Length: 371
Image 1 (cartoon, rainbow, N blue to C red):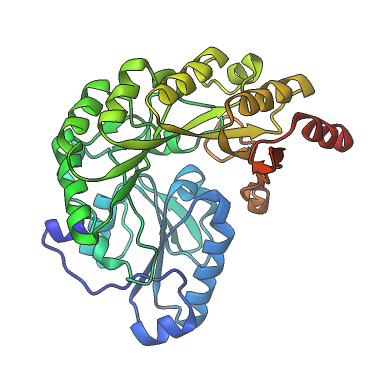
Image 2: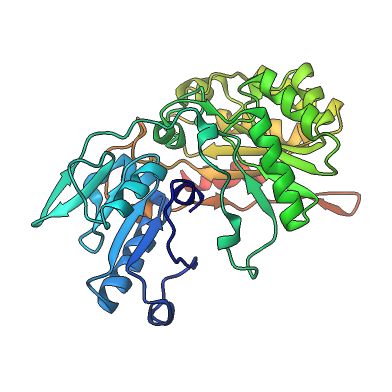
């Protein structure tokens, strides 16, 4: 919305978590814009059906990682798919009264029952030309916890990651731009904590240091994500000065073989060093892990759970998903297979207290039973 406004375009809009018949009757939209990842694409298709059954004249537009990776899956209830970065493409569509055209880059659309695609949209650079998001569109009934992105993309290309393929390359908002948005969110929403949800916040140590200096006295605490091999003694100190209280790290595994297969670019030694460096600064660690990986053995899984137990890491353990756009994708269009599956943590008891760390013996018994 803010990008369109910057370029002199204003229109009435409403945000909703679900385009129900009641919402459609009340708001009477000309266009319904959806966004979707593969994990919830079936839900997006259902929403498109609801809209078209209500009024076939309403334009349904979808953007996001899924349609960008497999534009040929645009459903018959969707008129237009926005491929890749969407700000300029959406503005161009508005200026063309939401009629798709071969002159508008970054589109897939239906024309007389046939899917048409236009050429790729060039990336927006520098990112600072994009205004800060208009958070006022969200209803006050939604959770008040706020988040922001200070970059787009990642330097790495892990085989399971669709985000790095969607954004194509790493681009950074400037430290001044980031600080301005942080102070604006604090002023507008009165928050004391912010989640920075970049794929990795530490891609540029210089920029991280600049942001830290700019916001260290803001009266805020932060959560950030980082790659294990980017968490050095120096960067951990930068995060400490910035008042980062927790860092999320995609360890994925603590098996050298599995990390190589996933093309993570880090090692078990990097994993341990990251934990040590953050704990030294009193920063909490949250781990993301993946299992059910091709070639994974009992010993590989054992190495991962041993690492979790040794370091008493809070974590999520996910089932590996072969997402479209990644080297793991084999062409299946059964999107239900791509639903997120998180293995529920087991617990071990120490001095009468429950700790959220999976006991090795129980995990191995379950694995052996499944085999």
